[in-house]
Image 1: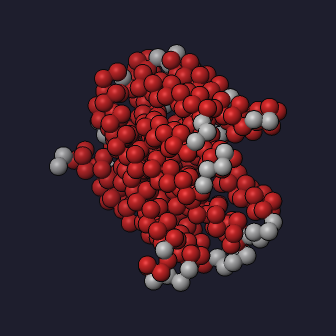
Image 2 (image 1 turned 120 degrees about the vertical axis):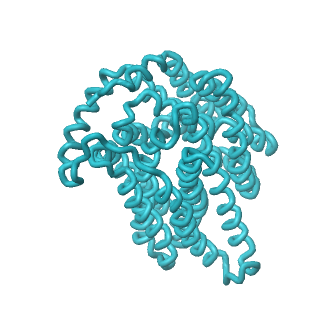
Image 3 (image 1 turned 90 degrees about the horizontal axis):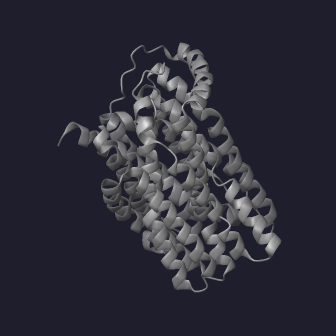
Length: 424
């Protein structure tokens, strides 16, 4: 096996590792357990408020720290060290949810926020390793492989955790509540185990003039302010980031609101869980197969096709009224979700300076944390004003159309040329 193949697979396995947190904890069991076990189930307003604050706090912490820590990691050649720190935090705090007793929601929030910071903060440094992991001709493959493995790995553990919850006696577990607590522990162990190949076999690109970590903090702050000026000057990067923020906001809104939409239309919970698992497993081959589209047409056209696909999903969602419609839309989401995320990440790697990848990916992931801000607010407001949630769903078209139009104006060739220049 070629050295770059080992590096690519070792790097991509980190997606397999940490996606278990996104599926089992964030999307699956934590919201369910939080409402029914750690908080008073008879007071849903309190639990919704506390959970909302927890998610907001984690997002704000990561969004505020990511660009600065990225700059420090670039100056001090510390991407893997920061990734190890955030991975350790995420694994330990996720596993610690096992210890939280019934009714102790403040401690559950504390552990969840810390685990979320570990998960989201680590992504800045994980993404920033991509330009050094794969040669230019394989960077799209590497990014897509990561997302594909993430969907598959996260889906495998989530399926096992759901089975443990539904059939606890089959696993010798006392009850469903204990099964969920074990599921949190399993995520921490899974994350730690499958993160090991990255730390063992992925080499961090050398920095020409590395600084000691202490001095790198001061240099990182100066570099961060300089990068803000650079992004304004680098029209290609700035335009791409705005386009990405808009269309990924639409993608995240659909991800976050699809289950709520299904519940509103009266679909059973079992169908919604089935659809969620279907997305996980269909997205695995779809993300890799979509690489052929990118290979034939180019990365930017492939992203634009995916954004157009989401436009179609949004329009069809307006007319959805039966359960099989929901499954069909879930299949459409599976086709485009991983592809638009993976290709956006690899396209961004092409247009940023490789020697400052962590810093630039800090801004990239900061926008990712602020994604799904406009979309849910717009969806909810339109639904409230019109009295019809279908109008709220179709309003998300604005984000896809605006993001796609801006992306069509991004000159990738110019961005690649500028990225090759020394921007120190």
